[in-house]
Amino acid sequence: MSDIFTSLTQSEFQEKFHSLHDRIFSGQEDSDIPDECDLPFTDRYWERVLLEEGVLNLPDENLRALTIAAEKMGDRQIIITDSETRPPHQMSVIATWNAGTLDHIRTSTLLNHFKNHTFGQSGTWGLVYYWDEFSILGGTSVFMEAFFEAAGGRQRVKERFLRFAAAHWWASVEPPTQVKILKSVGWSFGDVAP
Image (tube, rainbow, N blue to C red; front, side):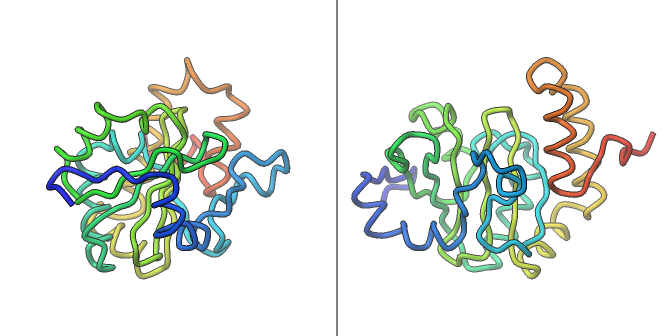
């Protein structure tokens, strides 16, 4: 593997990571059944939070917290795969945790233009990126505690996302969809401190 990232063919992804991927992600984010699309992870008990942007554009504070938490789980590398193309996983990479590497992936692949799934080989967490410029992060209680500790706490993560959504979603996400997305993790715009 280079210091930047390694692209995986669809068959390489299937052979090396498909079973792990399917243990983490439910594939239900596009479901027409409302209760299913709110549960993108196979473990329905994983805590979930919303993050602004996707792994290839995360603000430094979130990227730092995600990197720290993932590395505590033993994940020194991440796998990013498209979940929107049919069949899925036509574009996949494995990379080290590095802002420069993620920026290079963003500018040299099409992964940032499709819904994608990001995960580590520990299988303890996953990140679903939606092209509406937000992600849902979920994980085991140990992973999520490590993430919140590195991110400054649950409330800080929530308030940062809600401020982002209030400032940026007005042009791209319909109000009923905004409410549904926030409700999927137990949040509302009323949760923001003045």
